Image 1: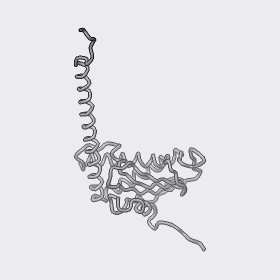
Image 2: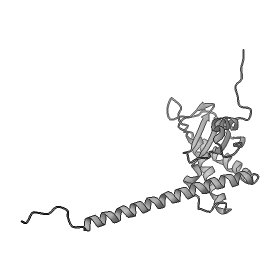
Image 3: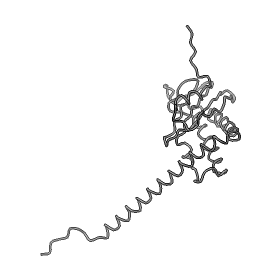
Image 4: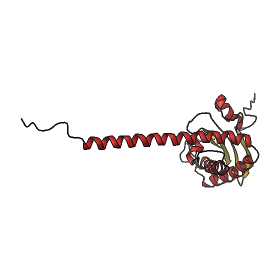
Length: 202
């Protein structure tokens, strides 16, 4: 008996199944499938509704690369550059979104097929082909540009999410600065105050 196990809509279904009800967008963004030179690339991404660290699952020739690698680096560089420039330049956010803000709550699946893959160890946890990073970067740049020009409603939702992340980051920094300032002031006051214990004079 032969059985074929697959997701009908590729990595988008895989990502949607992983995120379940926590996803920001009803359907994850599928950047399509493209081949650049000898590398076939497929990527889908979405955001969750929280302030969780990035969660990017990556594969090379269907092998799970648990520690990412050059394919993930190419994707991250592209999406941060494109989204950062777009939301700030189009003034879709009130706060200035930083590079790190882009990755908060980001969920993605990055899948590549390439000849002669090279890994950092025998367990194949991390891909290290430098040319793959360039291929993925080129693929993502083009796909993101097309998506930005055709999906205004999705972009607004993501922009609102990024604005909230930026506001939270700024508020945390202000609170931390206030604590540091208060602590520093208390320390100076304690140093200027008379010592609690002095030599007995009588």
